[in-house]
Image (cartoon, rainbow over all chains, first blue to last red; front, top):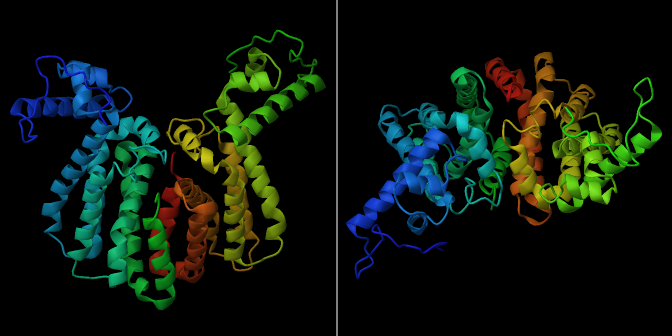
Length: 238
Length: 238
């Protein structure tokens, strides 16, 4: 729901009879969005406010609220932008390898690379994201568009590999790997080593362990508990 | 540092020449502490304030600040109380088993049982705890007393078991298990199933997997990556 329909001013949004936004309206929306995304990257979550974004985009506060009912809507735009950049950086690299663990490594590493500019703002974003009730929580319904991109990258890494997993694992793994990526991001947000090299080492050692441990998932006595754990992990936040 | 030294009033703290607190001063401190801990359990983190605690304990706000310079100091008292109750419930049960996985299960299960009353307040506590800069973060220097209790319980579960691990793992495991307990608590805080049964199932399946996978840590090709991962995990937040 729109919080504020005060749309007075020259840049008032308008639609044609088919509900399509006019080019001007699209430009105004794009300008507010770009201003906010730049501010999140330069100033972080706490210091970016609707008023400051409206001022910098030279629109009225009411007009900014017309396009983005809350600051959280702008953060969702950021999530999607970051994950689309993640996908764009992953796609050409996935084409270079058919090894499962190498392909997963590409998705994790490129994901961390996209997060890098936000490290100094991690405390503010984390505090806003962590509550199970927060619309900014990565598990929330509002975060679905960004989540689908990342889960999709893990699915692509798996299905395009020459070493395939048993089907029951292939369908369960993308959501579990995405959650492991969130946990790696949590570790990264606490990582005070230069350039967060410690997180990179944790990732590389984790991939090394996965490489040697992966053949074991075919063992009957490991399959049942692993399958249950993957199901329960995928249900996190439901 | 004390934020406020306004100690006017009949319940003014006082010490003898050796710096020992008088019995009256100790009673005032205990009363403020007990009032705050009860409020955290009944009202949660957000709704518990220094002013309300002072009012309910019938002391001046200045006096409350004399004993507890910030609300965070009272939360640390809560952490320690919860972990001491955790230890008290674990000790007699550990005496009943010498099996490593069963002993670890006792520590995890009793830990979750202590958290149960706080489930409905998890969002408020999580938001206050999650920032790497928060003194309430479980990894912070301020949280050391509570952390030491829990890490000590995992150490006790390991060293008292008849099935011992290689020494290099025994020294690294308690901190890593404690971190896994934090992650389980995070899952629990998001768990909306009745009585958080889903978290219990995740724990039981995890213990089942640990039981079948544990012998593998002696394999040379698993040992090196596992050791590195345990070291990196133990460095989280440093």
